[in-house]
Length: 186
Image (cartoon, rainbow, N blue to C red):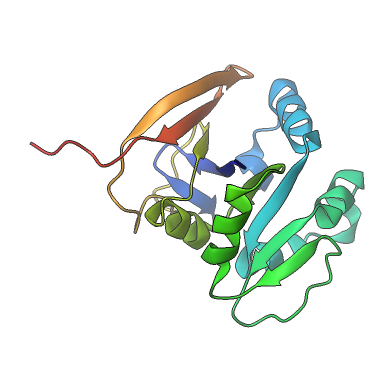
């Protein structure tokens, strides 16, 4: 079975993006950057939404290094009801029935499928029972004034089991969780 993994970088208060924040919220310590490079070098398929594709495509050319080029060539999908094709050579466009495609891919063998951002897709994967791992990358800041895209808003009630954890550069916390059914309500 192929795993579907959601990776999301968050502030402590759950913002998935900051209006004024730089990439990685400015946390680019050596351990964190080495962990990212190692993880991104692992064979995987990418799953993103149109908004994430637009944001990543708008990165200035001066920052489009070899890592950026590899990201655009990595195989995977973009979920969109408005696009029919994309300029990234590795991506195929999936429409509204994307969950059916992912269900079939998950049932087969192959490299993991990894989301980047794309909160709406993550919510739908979780609600459909297709998410195998939720990797939360917490940066030690809160953004009550400039934080946007609250990650957990709109998600179903869900219980998780901690599968792995690490602290990078004594500040960034990575938590890997596996869904574990519905919560026990009192």
